[in-house]
View 1 (cartoon, helix red, strand yellow):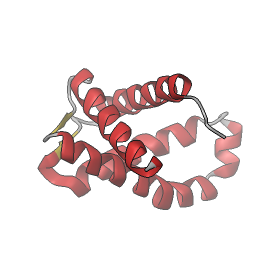
View 2 (cartoon, helix red, strand yellow):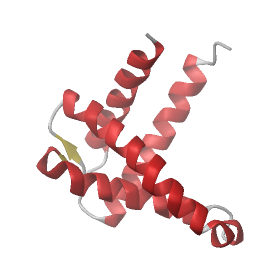
View 3 (spheres, rainbow, N blue to C red):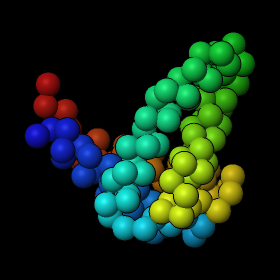
Length: 115
């Protein structure tokens, strides 16, 4: 049940971020859920490897490289999903990643942790 709620919240966050960011758009709420899954998987698999290889540089830049990798993973997800999810370039993907991070932080604070 927790996974389904998390999935729906991720879809909601992606849909709201696509609404707020001028160059981003998603085809619908179902595609927002799929987009959230794809961004998460790409960020975990490809982004994880990139973060591992760029760890020294990431450490020197205080995490800036990690954020750039996240933005690049949003752009890769845009390429994978075709016309169903679209960000208009690097700066729109950057703004999209910031909005998603802020919204997830707010939901995390409001929802709390039940452990």
